[in-house]
Length: 112
Length: 110
Image 1 (spheres, rainbow over the protein chains, first blue to last red):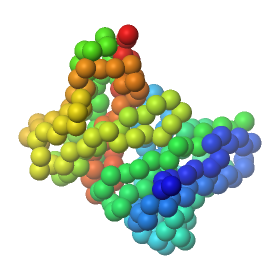
Image 2: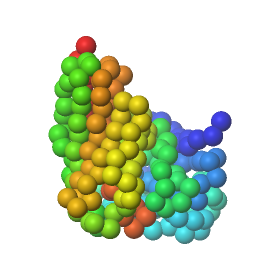
Image 3: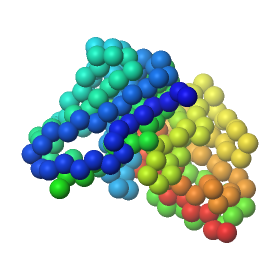
Image 4: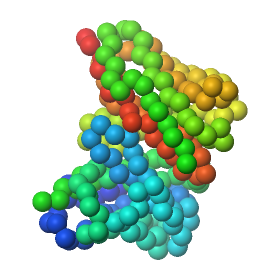
């Protein structure tokens, strides 16, 4: 069953703590993306990766970090430097940059 | 970068009527325009897309039109049904990145 999985679905963290969100795909896609979604707003690009071992900052990369050591995996770390981390985080993948993007189910992060 | 504006922000239609959502983009180099449907608490799903070399595309009750000169594109849903109620996002692709509109919440009244 091919697709994109994100875990966990809900995540709570205390202020000052780093937290890592998981994103895995078995679609054999080269490109992967992380977006942030706030209530009543569109999706904003945090980071993207066009190929393994390479990634670029999106529009709102400050306070976030990523790695792309494997084609299937693109974890996102929300660091304590992110001022307003409470949001819905979406991971996506595509065959190549500019192709249709497939989204995961999302992780809702709440900072207590 | 690309800037995408989407209107209206909310849309309420009677079941069986049509719904139209409009988007404009700023960079004429954008070449791919997908539309996504998002249900509450879920990830967006692609419902239709169009590339810059095509003016119109249709898939059953859904159609998208693109006017490159005016830099705007629209989503048309005909014969709306209750399951069409959701948030719809337009997007434009530039430099291998998608920029999204703010979304339209569509409510289909029975």
